[in-house]
Image (tube, rainbow over all chains, first blue to last red; front, side, top):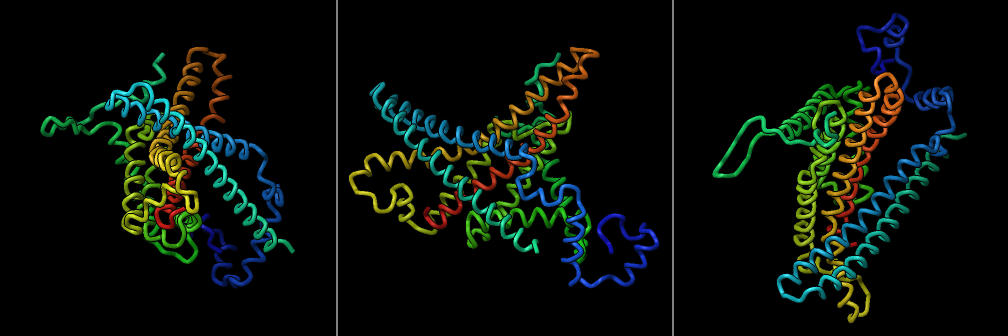
Length: 136
Length: 240
């Protein structure tokens, strides 16, 4: 069997013999399952690793949401400030657009939340399907 | 001790001045070329063998392809695959820029907001053009939720407009801030290692998991940038 390493040409004798007469591909699923079962920590992977990665992904999600909120407020404030300077209506448009920006930010946060939720559900469903296919 | 922000200094390597416009080739440009070159080389050699059972390079190329293809299919729908070349280029460019930047002494061009903002602006303008090309003036419905009472337009249209305009800002600030903060942190703790002498082993031990975390963030941020581009593309193709 050639699995990338060792590369062809440097393989040991017994592997080369195997290579002459490769096992059928139809057998592959079963062998893969066996190999996976032998790995240390097999069966644990479905439970979201060891929690650390979940923390990091959660941190990234939190950061993502914070930026969404801030960006809309900054854009709203900038539009208000610019219009104020142009029309000479300080500070009313700044106040108005700051509030609109905050509303837009909250809407962004809501949409990001929905999006993250959808992604998490899709991931869980995919894992479930994988387990159902792999389990016996 | 060197300042932790010294690593973000732009240095001119080749001075180019065209009509008063400073178009010098800088260390930032150099690492953009390196990122594009390394990515192209890996993908070229990964795609040249076309073995039934892939080697490491081919596996890498195939994994990258499948990752991006799935990302587009899941987030932008089947029609989004038309834009696969652009999305793939975007992802690979940012990914290699981020990851190569972790190598000590390398320059991280994604730690400059002007670079990430330019990338985000290309996505933003592209998506807007696609939206108007597909839906004509109907794309303006993006700014007014379907079925809301008409009088709410006074509030909803500005809010939606601001939300739409905030996209390139949030997209670029997220990538830039993550890369900058990570690199400053690495440099500060790296400075402690030198300053503390023998006791520097303590921050040094801390530096190893931190570098791994930065590697994780580098990949994750490239992924998030691309996935959000796909989400925006979806909005342009299907109007929410």
